[in-house]
Length: 122
Image 1: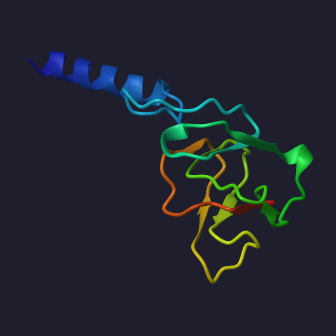
Image 2: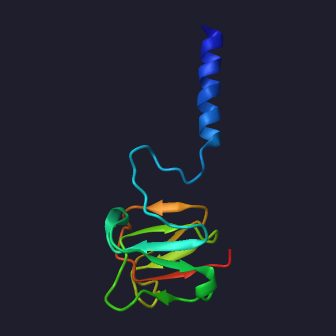
Image 3: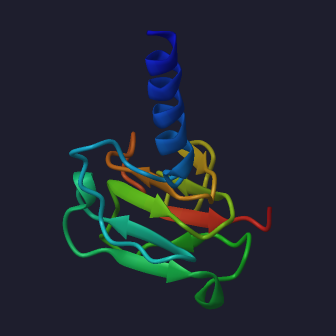
């Protein structure tokens, strides 16, 4: 009995350690977002046409507003850097804002309409 329990626990730990850090729970559908990208979807659950941003196309630590009249309700941060999203289109901290680490964060429903973001150096 003891040997079977140890083997079962070992198998579970091996499976958990082998899974990538950004692995989603079973049954969760994630939107497509490539390595090094920040992907923003207009609707919850990664629905709609994503806006994809890369470090090569944005100024680090600058406020980047989404196109006028658009917002995002879900996102994936695969930039490798922290990203702060803002309810305000000018990155004002008087509205809601949230910072997400850059190690493969998938957010199916943001707590507010994202209208701008900043990608941080570290």
